[in-house]
Image (tube, rainbow, N blue to C red; front, top):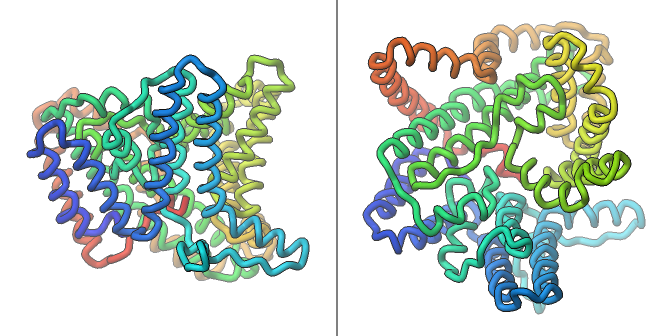
Amino acid sequence: MVFSTPVFLYVFLPLVLLLYYISPTRSKNFIILISGLLFYSWGEPVYVVVMVLSTMIDYFAGLIMNKFEGRKLPRRICLIVSICMNVGLLGIFKYGGFIFDNINAIFGTNIDISRMYIFGIDYLPMDLLPIGISFFTFQSMSYTIDLYLGNVKVQKNPVTFAAFVTLFPQIVAGPIVKYNDVAAELEDRSITLDLVYDGIVKFIVGLSKKVLIANSIGSLWTAVKMSDFGELSVLGAWLGILAFTFQIYFDFSGYSDMAVGLGKIMGFNFPKNFDYPYMSKSISEFWRRWHITLGSWFRSYIYIPLGGNRKGLGRTVFNLAVVWVITGIWHGASWNFVLWGTLYGVVIICERLFLKKLLDKLPAAIDCIYTMLLVILGWVLFDTPDLPSAGAYIAAMFGGTGILVDDAALYHLTNYGIIFIICIIGCTDLPQRAFKALRKKFTTFVNYSGTAVMIAMLLLCTAYLVDETYNPFLYFNF
C-alpha cells in the first residue's frame, strides 16, 4: 500500500475530505465507510473481504447481545463467537503458515496452506498477510467486549458501526481506537477551524517524521541488514541497529501522528500512541510510552479480566507473563517475536519484583542507558529473520567477529552523522519544549513562522515522494 505517495496526498485525500465536508451530517459516516473500503482495497483488493467479515461478525453479535439483554448465557455465547471468529481470522491469515511450518518441521509432514480452497475453488491467497489485520480485528472486538461488559450501548446502525471499523486514517496501523473512544463522536461531532488547523499540523509533522527522517535513516539499516553479520564490525553493527531503532520510532509514530491529525480534520479525537518512549528510565515506563493504545487494549481486555494485580503477587506475575507472550505473538508469526515478547515480560516482572527499586536509587542517566540497551537488543530480535541471525548480529555488536571498526562503518558514520543527531534530538521532548518557550515569548512571530515551516516541510516531503513510488510503513506488516 502506498499510503504516503503524492497520489494519496494530492488526489485521494483531498477528494475524500471535500466530499466529507460538503455532505450533510447524516451522510458523513457513509463517506467514511466508502473511503475506508476504497483505501483498504487500494492496497489489498482481495483481503478487504476479511475486514468486511470481521465487521459483520461483531455488528450482528452486538445486535443479538442487545436482544438478549439481561440473559447472561446467550450474551456470553455471542461474545465467545465474536472473539473466536476474529481471533480465528487472525490465526488463519497471520499464524497459519507459522503453525504448519513448525508442524511440518517436527513431524516431517508437507502440509501446504499457501492458498485457501472452498469447494475446490482457489479462493484466497494465504501466503500474504492482510494489511493491518491485527489492528482492525482488535478494534472491532473492542465493541463486542465492551458491549458485553455494559460499557457501551449497542450500535444498531450498520453504516455507523462499519464506519468505526473502516476509519481510513488509522485502519491499517493504528492507533488502535476502541469503540468507547469514539462512540459519541460517531453519533455527533463538530469540526472547528482550530481542530482542523491542529490536525493539519499534526499530519504534516507525522509525514515529515516518516519521509524526511525514518526513510533517510532506514536506508542505513537496509544496507547493514543485507550484509553478512559474521563480517560486521562492532561500530557497523551498532550503527545499523541504532538506525533501525530510530527508523521504527519515527516511522510508526509518524503514521500515528498522521492518523491522529486526519482524525482531527474529520472531527475525531483519536488517543495518543507515543509519548517520547526513548526518554524512559525503565522497561515498564518504555511500554507505557510506546504503542500506548496496544498496551491499553491488552490491559483492558486481558490483564484486568485475568485479575490484574488484585489477586496476589503470584497471580500478578502469571498475568504479566500471559500478556507479554501474547504481545510478542501479536507482533508477528516467528520465534523471534515470541522470544522478544517473553524477554520483555521477564524484565518487567523483575522490575515489578525488585529491579525497579534498585533503578530508583541509580542516577537517571544510568536508568536511561539500561532501558535503551535492552530496547536496542530487543529491536535486533524484532527485525532479524530468525534466532540464529539475531544471535549472530548481537555477537557482532559485542566484538564476536573480532573487528572493531572497518571502512564501511566509518563511511556510514560520515554519511549519516547529521541524521543521527537529528534523530537523537527528535526523539526527545526538547523540540516541543523549545517551541513552547519561543511561542510564549514571541507569540505572533512563532505563529506565522510556524505556518511557513509547515508549508516548507510539506513541500520538502512532496519533493522526496516524487522520486519514491513505494513508501510502506513498517507496521503495515502487522
